[in-house]
Amino acid sequence: MAIVDPRTGQPLTGPEESSHNGAGNNVAPDDVIVDVTLENFQQVVLEGSMQHPVLLQSWASWCEPCKNLKPVLEKLAQEYAGAFVLARLDIEAFPQIASQLGVRSVPDVKLISQGQLYDQFQGALPEKQVREWLGKYLEAPAEASQSPEEMAEAALASGDTETAQAIYQELIQQYPEHYDYQIDLAGVLVAAGRADDAKRKLDDLPPEHRDAAKARGVRARIEFGEEAWSQADIDALGERDDSEAQYQRAMRQIADGQYEAGLEALLAVMKRDRAYGEDAARKTLLRVFDALGAEHPLTVAYRRRLFAMLY
Image 1: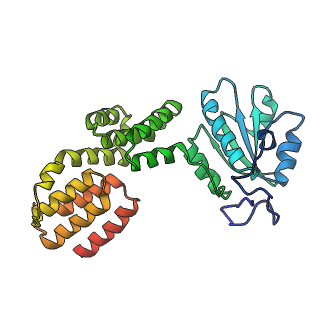
Image 2: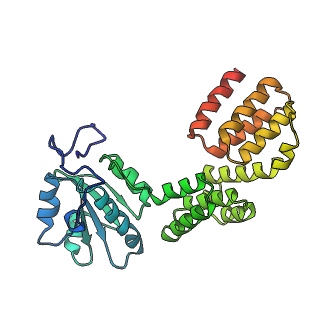
Image 3: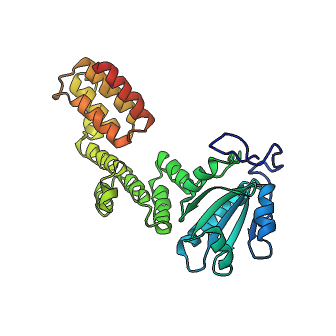
């Protein structure tokens, strides 16, 4: 498997690809994970990188973030089944190597190929972010396992809020300063009908995260849930098809997370009765865009449709 330089789009490892092809290969940890020493650094890192990419992880026993990152990198090294070698450097045992590499803090991860440094990151990134970082250079295994974030999202999509909550709580414990996980947990609490707990979770965030777009989106979902009619009231509308009935059904759909159906219904209200509720449908569309975020596919698509309708 060739490693690709994102600046040129060209393989970094030359024309011959590794015989390993990702998940499905039974590789022993010793085949893809090596502890670096003074004696083997030349062979493992410098010479080794001429044959395959090397992920050089610098760590220390006193470093708590290193302990969180260690199992993530080990998991990926085995999952990628030889597409790269994970070389681990204990900076306490070999400070001279760390000094030569310019390692100033740990964890420090460097991607080396053909004897050159191609990228690096510092700190204990969560698994999903490490996968995304690797994905810039290496093709993911065909049968890659799900990250904890993906498992939480799948659980939430299936209505299993208990499992999603447990996953995010564990991630928060591992990465207490990765505040997006706390916002994700607040979103799960909203889905579980625990809006007050979600509000408290958001209120406890540092100001820069409390007021960020992602947190505002969760707050908007809470507000939609408070404003929307109950399902019993929606059912009581029966066959009514006036503007109010359409609008209230849309609000219920949005509160329940059925965003596309709700957005479609709001556009229908606008087409039918722009004056309803003092332009309530358009204003609500904008609030949903804020809740989803500017880059969400639904925001992009429906903002374009709204613009076309207005102009």
